[in-house]
Length: 256
Image 1 (cartoon, rainbow, N blue to C red):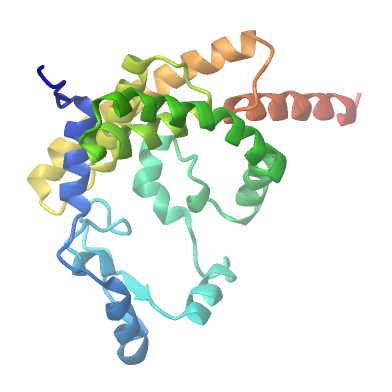
Image 2: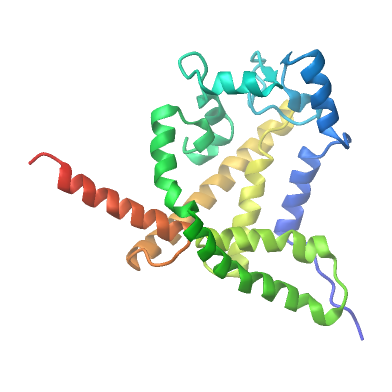
């Protein structure tokens, strides 16, 4: 009897590129962090360079001066001083591909407004609802490989299963081909930054194209879900209902 061979798909190939980009030979970064807390709590430069990973603070390799903080109190002081420090720098990196809608790249007022909008979708009640959504997904994934009594666990379970779970939570269609395409786009966005300028030119162009594809596909899903009256306990359902409620509140409280 021949065994079923799991062939590489777009998601496997693009994940390999992400793994290569963010991989490191440092087995225990916490030892390095502890050393820096003792000897260099404020380090000039981006710690990511120590791991040979492209900088998120100097995303376009402009030579921007960057510092890395290692002590909790220093990090907290920066986060609590928006008059001196800003989070919007992050929008020059990953935020470029998200239309500036990056929670960690928002300032105080916008961050608070967005966080409050998202909060109901991450409440204990919502988490329990997600558990009900995800249990069948995990069961189906395990049952698909169980009869063979052997599998490449990374390729057949540990990579695709979290992707399916995340997309189930978001509320994307249960369509394997579409899930593969969404995940491949997301991973091409992640490999946009590169330390080599020539590689960066090519990969950033690819990342922007992937971001546009993902945006267009997601917009189609949202439009269909809105036409269904925002039904569902997934993230899209929660956000559509929150927008509807916000619109009603605005209508009630706006001056005549």
